[in-house]
Image 1 (cartoon, rainbow, N blue to C red):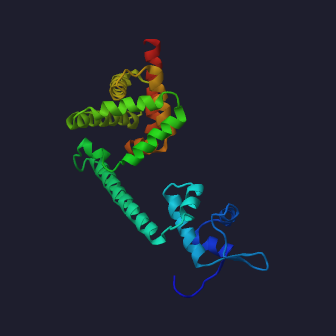
Image 2: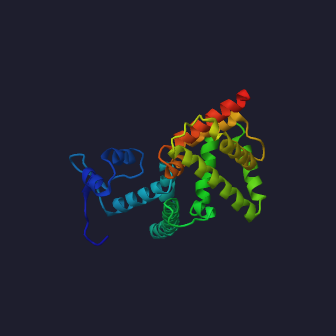
Image 3: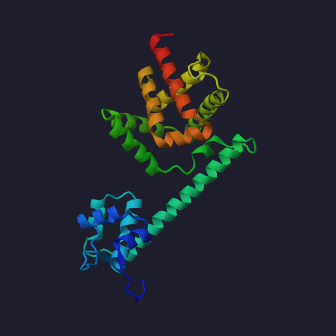
Length: 263
């Protein structure tokens, strides 16, 4: 950072970094980022090493580390700041490539929905990472507990047993079902209409195939709650049609109620 020793008050460092004064005070209190010195007026002053350490803290926060994990890492004997920066760069570059692919997937989907090109349904899922899938699984386990881990493992085992052609067929089937239901949403067909039962029955059967067991009506309604509550599912369905998340969840619950009643 050069030979000039720049000093920052806590307010100046907050403005420079975008981190709030309150957060910097908290980092000081827990020993994560101590100021270089305290002035006679009890002001905190930060210098180049602290600025670099704050950058490392923010990098690790972006990558999902807890404050305790960051403190242990940065204070570890032999911590190499340059090596850490190279590692951050490599990881961010991989993420940038993945996000670029996701943007291309979105662009292709928009073009397809606008009738400007024909998109293979297997293209719909390019760019979605194993890390994201692992995050979804952990979210399900933490939210629903019980035998969710076992059920996820069964579903993953079922998927792993399929050939590439079978997987592609399943993805195409799902994409077509979601497209049909999204079109019903755009046409403003009531979500509790029995006219949707054919598509919803096929959708519930598709879920059962992925679970490697039948999907009971009550669990199908529970799946609708998952779609409503997880932001990534919302983003996916809203891309198909505005309001489609609530529409699909409402349709699934209405269908489940009819199936439970035997109507």
